[in-house]
Length: 248
Image 1 (cartoon, rainbow, N blue to C red):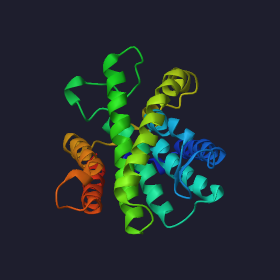
Image 2 (cartoon, rainbow, N blue to C red; image 1 turned 120 degrees about the vertical axis):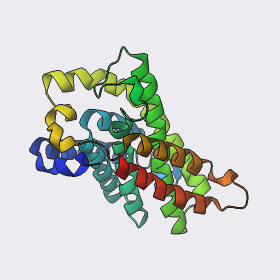
Image 3 (cartoon, rainbow, N blue to C red; image 1 turned 90 degrees about the vertical axis):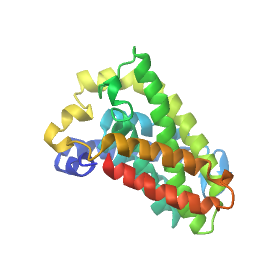
């Protein structure tokens, strides 16, 4: 997670945060009231095509941009409230995990950080990473919103997961369309913008990656564990997801 903090020393990464936040926030605001799932809480989010692609393209700038963009969407979309804090954290994770998990889930596959559209390994990795990032985001947000007594954990976690996953998978088209231009013509691929020293190495990448995977899946299925409230499972899994992110 080192890069998520050292990036603030890089002026180009800071600009990318602002760009990602503006694009994501604008997309959320534009469709805020189009098809509400839970009025005042969540809706069909067309903007979800951006976070996964932003994370892979812009790394930590994409993560922070997604977090601030969601906050902007809440602020100007009329849904700002206590749950927006959880939304900030959850959306940061949604943008953080794509680049953090990319090379750590299957280290023996030796996947490069760069997107390779002709590689089936990269495509499969994309779909899996997008799903796990979507679920992790859903678990974190839903646990907090349930604690506030707004929406039950078991309901909201499924809605957010579906919203994020479908948007993220469609976002593959966006990533495939702009990656080469972003990297080769504009020179804005995050791993080339930041120094390797500032990117650093994970504390325990493989362990952290699979801790996030297991906690996310268990959190999504929390309601099926006998005699354990879904919200309790959600909070335990939220804690494990955060630990996993730190290890990454």
